[in-house]
Amino acid sequence: MGDLFVLDHPLLLHKLSILRDKNTSVKEFREVVSEIANLMCYEATRDMPLETVEVETPIAKAMVRRLAGKKMAVVPILRAGLGMVDGISRLIPSVKVGHIGLYRDPETLEPVQYYCKLPNDIADRDVLILDPMLATGGSAAAAITFLKDYDCKHIKLMCIIAAPEGIKKVRDEHPSVDIFVASVDEKLNEHGYIVPGLGDAGDRIFGTK
Ligand code: PRP
Ligand code: URA
Image 1 (tube, rainbow, N blue to C red):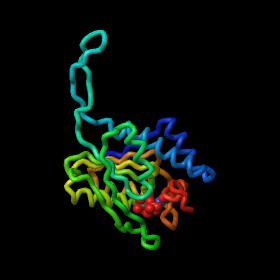
Image 2 (cartoon, protein in one colour):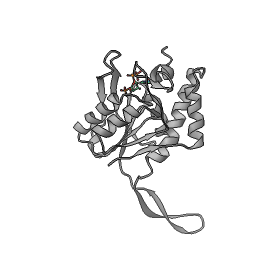
Image 3 (cartoon, helix red, strand yellow):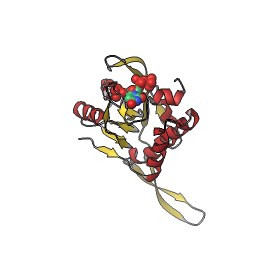
């Protein structure tokens, strides 16, 4: 069974307060999304396997621990997930990046897929799906189903803000997936927006409204 991790580090909560503020500029919003992804990456990669090797310091030999080289991929859900990639790749420069394009039909709120490009060996990689917003959960659940169809076995989901409805949907449909969030907000409004949320993440990252 996967877990829900609600990350509450003071730096994260402070940065989240900047995202929520409607007066935050596009430039700052984009920067802070990336910084939050960077901070959340610490927790989402806590179980990365390590190996012990010997190195020589200028003083003596030392047994040290380093990453065992398990392959990882991040998969941002377009568009808004793109804003989180850079925050992860600054910590894990060799990470491969797949893209899944989904948008929510404004009437039905159902996810519509329009793009997909994944690393060839995605099935052998630990996959971290990125999307700032988990609202109804339709987009995230569809992305996970899609990755499972590609035979991915180890899938995690990282979102900045989640609604209880979205968490429930993902946990019901994909119980093995760990979910990492910085906030579980109150509810969805009648248009499927998270309350209080931060508005439309894609529009605020890319300045399209
Ligand atoms: C937003 C967000 C998620 C989705 C969440 O994307 O980035 O992908 O909505 O909603 P859900 O949990 O109800 O599926 P949107 O569809 O607005 O597309 P965009 O990123 O291109 O703006
Ligand atoms: N997508 C967003 O960008 N924001 C929400 O509140 C819900 C879905």
